[in-house]
Image 1 (cartoon, rainbow over the protein chains, first blue to last red):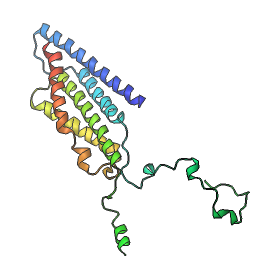
Image 2: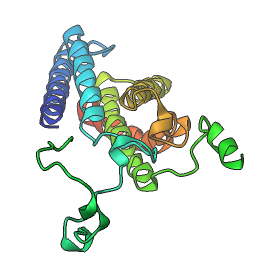
Image 3: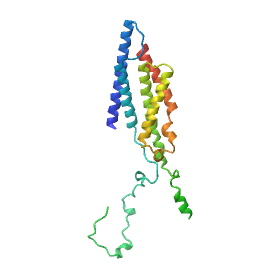
Image 4: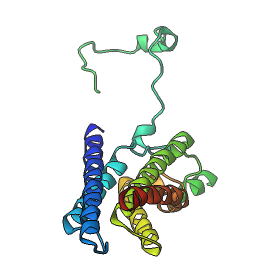
Length: 106
Length: 113
């Protein structure tokens, strides 16, 4: 998320720099009394790189998509709260033979 | 037998979806498209597009945005949205107005004043 922001800011800065360059270029054209046909080549490259970076940032910064399927791993029902209401100790398991040395299988 | 039939058509659209996530998935799409419309408008203004070319540029940017959003959804819209239209078409017309606003704004600043 931080990287996306930085990339977006760099892209914005490149575009602003391209704007300044174009304003300067137009000023020079006015002095030489020529027509404006398009920004100079390096400004075009700057704009395209800025567009690419902002495209990437604009897609990466907003939060990622959350799955809507009910059976996916991320949508599992949250586990029960771990308080005494849900812990039952007085059950029939106490008559079963148990091995206290068994390791817990997680 | 009836339950078995029901289970055999799980390939169809699931009837139960997590609607919270469905709603909240609309937000990144909206934010991305609005941001990219604004950036596209500023670039079109700086570049000096007038008339039809500018709108063509807007749709090129939106095409790239649609591709990016589809990639973000890992090309399987079914696990994040209820239809492909949401990923590919939603928000294009709304972004058009922001695009034109920033396009005229940037064009005025760079080329007129």
